[in-house]
Image 1 (cartoon, rainbow, N blue to C red):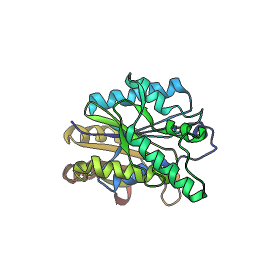
Image 2 (image 1 turned 180 degrees about the horizontal axis):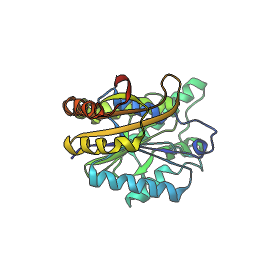
Image 3 (image 1 turned 30 degrees about the vertical axis):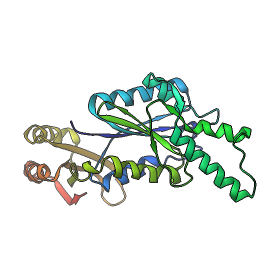
Image 4 (image 1 turned 180 degrees about the vertical axis):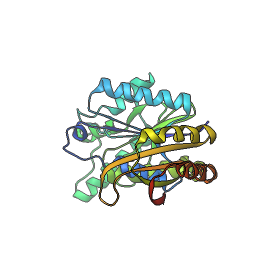
Length: 274
């Protein structure tokens, strides 16, 4: 089973344009630094039914294919935060205050009281409410938060898992790294992907399609891609044609692609490696 990685980004503020999503490029960066690749991304607003349906798909993929999914946003305790409740509903389990989360949140509240120079009162209404941030689906595991100690959580499903993080990048990104390095270190570099491509001028994608199909059929383990552009600042109108996959497979497929291209009378630009 090949582990694939995905991300779910939750929040009306992203879909309305109030805030620009920064999680997608960051997780691509973090995965790429470890020789891994993002397979899919979903965006959903603060609608409980849609969140539940989206998370149900994520859990289904985790069970069936071993997907690892990061979910960012909506794990707070305000009325517009629904992710914890929706995760429990998608799993068909109850919610409960996680003992370790309770301890961490209480520790954070004590730190805050000390910073403010006031005595800590565990029974104060707002402190009791803050413990809701540690109410997770039964069976969840803690994800530590180095920024303010308020944890995220993970729920396993089959061979995969969904990891729930805050929407704030300053918290979410180090938590992503912790998950990748503590739970998936055994996958680092083993599925490293590279891309090799060439810039082609004066061609249409339809002309190149038979060659693309032939390369994929003849070289299992690689994907052929075609990326057309009409107004590139350097190359103008062109097609970037290439192959991507594990290095050994690309090393065989890319020369075959170049040989196929030479059958046409195209003007060629530079070759690219990523």
